[in-house]
Amino acid sequence: MKNVEEKLLASILSHSYVGFILFNSNKKVIFVNDIIEKFCGYTKDELIDTHFFEVVVKDEKYLKLVQSKLDGCYNNRPFEDFDLTIHHKNGKKIIFHLEGSVMEEENNKFALLVIQDITRKKEFEKVIESTYDNIMQSTIDLDAALKKIKEQRRVLEEYKSKMEQELNIAMTVQKTIMPKEFLSNENVSVWGISIPNKELGGDYFDFFHPDFSKLGILIADVSGHGVPSALITTMIKVYFERYAKEFVEPERVFSLINNEVTKTLQETGFYFTAFYSILDLDTMIITSTSAGHDFAICYDSKKDQIYELGKTDKGTIIGTFEEAEYDSSMFQLEAGYKVIYFTDGITEARNKQGDFFGIERVIKMFKEKKDLSPKDFIEYLIKELDEFSEGSTSKDDRTVIVLEIRKVPRSSEMSKENIKKIVDTAFKNGRKYVKEKQYSAAINEFLKITKFDKNSSGAYSYLGQVFGIFGDFKKAENCLTKAIELNNSYVQGYYFLGIIFYKQEKYKEAKECWLKLKEIAGDFKNVDDYIKKIDKMGF
Image 1 (cartoon, rainbow, N blue to C red):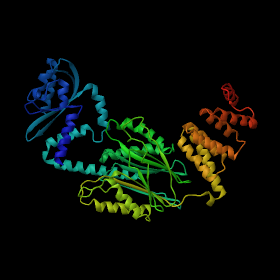
Image 2: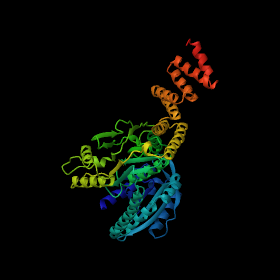
Image 3: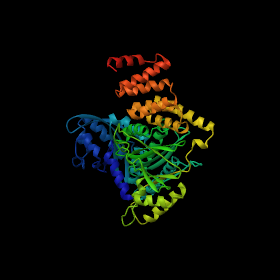
């Protein structure tokens, strides 16, 4: 502990923007920190064992003044701080602010002068005010240490105790940002846990509800360990609370958060990986996006089939590259399916022989303990992991989430009122997402409608329009054709199907759609202009 503190003290003095000069009882320099060399242009070797001010002060008047103040300091008179012009070795004059104090150790007097570039003075004072134990307190601690070497252990013990107290507070804060309550009902159950390697960890998981019919599932792993990583988990919490409730496209959420946090993290060297899913609780369709994180494992116990969610998704780590792009994939979960999310502290845990716990072991346990609830399985997994890694010094934060699908809502099992409520809400959300250009989310909503109301021409029409925006003209054509089959007088269906044909240069089919539209509704938007263009082309 002593060596660590000495290195810390040396680092503080070395990197400080403030100059420190220590004079012995003969008023000669016995110590200067690195910034003094920058201030005056002289090396430490050139300054040690000199009367400092005779070297750097060329004005006789100011030289006598500062020597007088230094003499007074040794005679126990207060050293009144003042500004002094110092001559740099290159001849340049620079104004500095001086403060000083005297200390006595074993009948020897030492004077400590603090020299600060006047242009940085106000900035430095603000730093002092905002720093937890501020630089002046560190200076006082240094004085006390020089005065009473025998008390150093007590001071360090007090400091250690204080740090432990603050660490306990930080641990409490980090625990509060993790979920305490977990969704569990007749349709779905989810549970998770995060166990830090040390007092504070860089893993994080959370759940969000963009709306009442959706569940967002997040797991993240910050690079590094300890206090910095723990602080970044708090940052993640803040950003996801904002964006995960505003947007229901996981790739959009990642993109927005990455653009925000990269501004902060780029200069620190920290980053984080993450995996985020949004589960539609009405249909059990799950949409997932990965940001450089391990894929989630889905197990179908009825077919004994493993699916890897998000494995093919492209998406880099968050916090390093601005304007990084992310994509998502959808997967239909069924009753009996279980999904496990984890950080690399699970799969990369090692035993004392150096063997990895590995993804294969996780999958094997997932299959063997398929009847356990999410909570019971996680507790079993952690127990097995502890036994496996016993005696190993290589440990990381460990975080696991397990999602279980107990039942998929079916329209045949629901009342007409509930179906109408789901359909109406999906229409409202879908139109909202189209307006906000959250097209993937809009598609999910309109697909949901078709599951509960297979005769909804409006849902198929909207799907056709959105697929058309994506440039997936085949799907757009199929959906709009279906909308017209359900309602052969559906004006919007004919109009947009004609647009899709036109974009594919199927001019004859486009014209037929619009002529049919005119039979039903007469003049409509810019249909006549389109028909004239087609006629000129000879179709």
